Length: 533
Picture 1: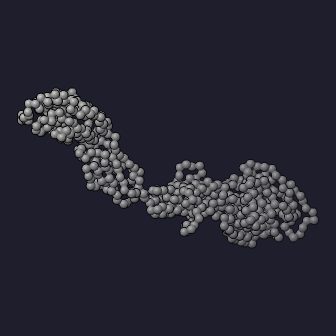
Picture 2 (picture 1 turned 90 degrees about the horizontal axis):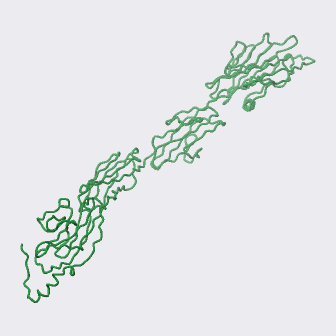
Picture 3 (picture 1 turned 30 degrees about the vertical axis):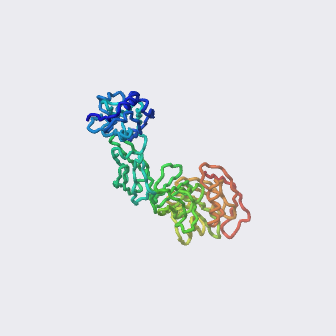
């Protein structure tokens, strides 16, 4: 359509000619600032101009070109003129949203790509044909990588077994761009919920095993071919589970794992560390009790670890770990059994009227068997005959037995006391010697440890008043002796204490006859006593 002109008086035309020849004097000179946009997003370039060709009659058209293009031959990147071929790269993304008729040349760019970088200039049609370039209406577009990340919103705490709706959104994206594509990645049980232009919902039912697992929301902007994502770790609250007790014995670093209601056997004096473990979020409060804890029971340990230190005598019974948690509490227990090898005290013998009384005691866990051997004869429990009487009396950790011999001895007899339980065997012996003419029975002491034999020679003219016989002993032996005296009748003669190496000691013995008749004089004998470590 040919341009339309107004018919003006000749004088007015002469006055306007200088103005038409100086369009730069009328145009508003405003230097455009550089425009920076992130890849995949949008850019808005505000623009306005004053048209020197205000007398131009009809529809005004504006054009945006990339700098360097031939405005009369090359296609523009954007225009408001229909049926004009645009650059393939910018078609549908660059839009002249302003109205050139009113002096508005604003430009909108969506789905920005790295290929959009450059300088752009604005032009309009001239009434005489061709295009007028507004040199001052140009801007430089700088495109940077997309730095924004999706937002994942989790309403409230995630509790195991309770569904929650999670939302992933990109509020920083522009609505006029190509709609983004959302995708979720999670090991948890989930299903897609409703979505909007710039957000997506996910229905999630967390489980205990989902705690700490990653949840990823990925967003792709197809118009620019860029993808961004955000990953969070699920914080799932759940009640304690898989409660167990880890047992560390001695210096071991590899625990023995015991389930609930287990039984644990330890050796007396052994270092043992019990650690209660339970999976829960938040972590449960753990404490230890003897037996089944009541409402106001006092714990023996307020932490997850209970140490049974060596050197003590631990109690037997039920130990309970209480697992307390806001979502539910539980308890796990074990039955503690303590074992120790027999600690033999005796035998000890002392003369009686027309006989001999021998005593033997043993301390052990579990309770040991205790028996006598008199020569080839085995004596245990409670029994008696014309010449021998045996009495057995258990008391707590102690087992006590006494043996009474009536009459004299015609031959030498070996008398031993034997104790046995699952942790070992202990024995100690005395050799009963018949006296020579005018003399009574002599003693030869012997102690044994699991089949080993250690002897100490004791001799004398006969049995009668005298001091106890015993060698040097270890601290443990002395403690055992005190316990023996406390729990069993004390004897006047004792067998030697077992030791690892022999030492030489002397004992002072004074013997008298077993008969009621007494010798007017007494014999004094020094004899070697060899005790074994």
